[in-house]
Image: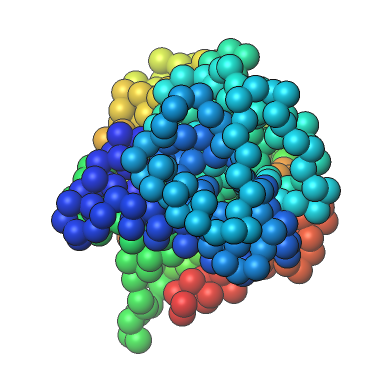
Amino acid sequence: MQKIFNSNQIKRCDEYTIANEPIASIDLMERAAKAVFQFLIDTVEADIFEIYCGQGNNGADGIALARMLIQAQKKIAVYVISLKEKGTKDFELNLQKLKLLHDAKIVALASSSDFVIPHHKAVIIDALMGTGAKRAADGLIKETIDFINYQSNDKIAIDVPSGLLCDEPLLQNSVVVNATATLSFQFMKLAYLFPENNKYIGKIKLLDIGLSRHFIESENTKHFFIDLESIHKIIPARKLFAHKGNFGHAMLLVGSAGKYGAALLAAKGCLRSGAGLLTVHSASNLEHALNVYLPSAMFNADPQQDKISQVPELSKYNVLAAGCGIGDAPETVKALKVLIQQCKSSLVLDADALNILAENKTWLTFLPPGTIITPHPKEFERLAGKWSNGFERLQMQKDFSVKYNCYVVFKGAYTCVSSPLGNCYFNSTGNAGMAKGGSGDVLTGIITGLLAQGLNHAEACIAAVYFHGVAGDLAKQKQGEISMLPEDLIEQLGNAFTKIINN
């Protein structure tokens, strides 16, 4: 699991690496610039680069990069914001090295009148401000960011788009470089994971610059980025003599007239994820469709033909999930309350169950410990209230998990799982083609299927969102983002499990 550190922790990680590797700070900077250089050489088809540098260490990275690009026979122009007589020590050292190269074009920018329209084929490199920025850009830096943003050239930010604050929301009227891509050193930054900042960041590439593994492993954080290595540790291998009873018996309380598709998607997602047995409790009208669509699932018919009105005997199920397509009929509302009160197993609530909870918030206090809820943004807003930015929403999500002793799977790009301990796990897989009705029902099925097999609540949530996203990425390869369906996602689940477990 990759840790997500704040700016102060990143600074201390740099300092610890310098002191304990040991390595001189300018040599660590050289390593970082080399990582950026290699990325550009490997992936960017351009021979002209125009680099905008501040006088701090982010600017020093840009200066070091310029030297490497010149030595690689690239055409380079470096624009330095001259706000003071001298920059940081490492900035000045790198600047002196660059001046020794006769092909180095270095332009000092003292005012906006010094701006030069970039070559139309140039890639602009942003090295104005780094992760240590604590306030909005102003003065000449602000004018430079505005100038860069006005250009149509591709823009690549070193470590962070200048003007973006990594650990707090943007201030009103802030300006930020609108990067085409951001090359983030070693760590994902929290600000990169919120939708309001996407327009500044572009595509994200994490560059390993060899910071201290000891510091990274020993430093505490509440924020994590889910990666392949962590998923390998979660999914157990199946034993040769295993039988269906070893992989749990799940029950889904799902579906109502007009929403039977949600029930079918959740059911198939559950079995495709490995549950040993599945029983679907739903309106009796669903039985024929379920038998045709998914004959491996068992059916428990509700007395009502078109809605759920009762809760069946629950003792033989080790995981229960409810909500996908159940509607909000009065009988269904009463049945959900009974389910919450009587549930002694793992419980997953989604969709209409969350909307019913939002209308009956006193029920939140008697959710079974460790209940998993899987809201999309609007459903979480109904439960917890409005927010003005991603940082505020994340804090609300953590507070909700802690207060109600539950897991919240906040769905969207970088789906975020929060735990009752206040830890947050951001997913690294998936794509915008999954933004279709039904994808969430599949996720509920996957979580339920993994819980049935004995994964704990955190493991089931983390693994489910990862595999859900991988299946979505495979479906995108086959159908494209526009045309892919939740059914395509389900059909790729087997390939997703095979790909990850065998990787």
